[in-house]
Image 1 (tube, rainbow over the protein chains, first blue to last red):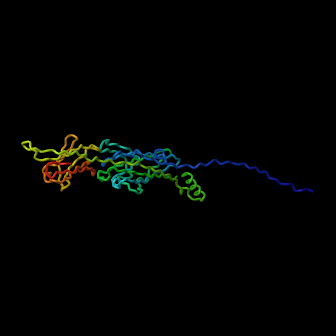
Image 2 (image 1 turned 90 degrees about the horizontal axis):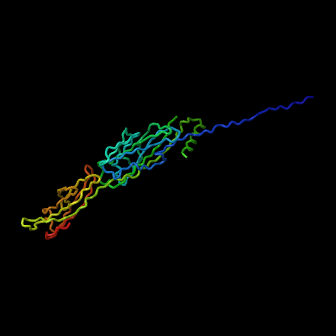
Length: 173
Length: 150
């Protein structure tokens, strides 16, 4: 009499470890910092007819290309000074100095994306969209402040503070 | 933190089977300027001097008043005007001698003021602008017309 034999199946399991997927990054730095206080944008005792211009460097410290948009606002100890301060924003602009004595004058060379015009207390778009900034590349923005000759007498001995909010947005693949 | 949030959004989008392009990363930086200070103009610092006007025999006839000040060169050489602002208004001539400026309140103005006061305003102005700074000085002629104070 013959019995039924036991059937057996062999098996084996191997584990394949997947590679770690690391996400990219989008990181905007302004002069190497996340938030920046722009001390260079100044002209001591600015008077009507005078202007100053300085360049800001924006860096792509991430792995993703982006474009930049900028809004700006300003505060002043007297509103008349804010109204009389003409702001110009020039992407990729450079500074040109035309006079170091009164009326001291500096300007931004290039095509303006904003101005010359006054900023208000509310955010105003001064750059809608920049050229693409690739990873580890940079973009320069030239900003000029010019105190209009028609500035009211009340604008003496006052202070003016501009603020720029810069948004880097990933470029769609 | 920004990166982590963005990755989460991207993962959810992929799992749901929708287009990965629906998620877009962004980063925001704020740039604050330091306060830009506007300049000022120095108001004229006046020095007052009464000067006797002598007659042919050396007799004191009348007195005039001379206001002098040093012209400011900040931010550039300023323009100056002088004016009687009370009583009434009357423009006065300003003369230059180097960096010194002066104006005279002549006897014809003062003799009508026995016992009264005239207010003179000297104004500094930045050319081609609305910036100005002024100083007022009262000049008083006594009742007898013998002495001027200012």
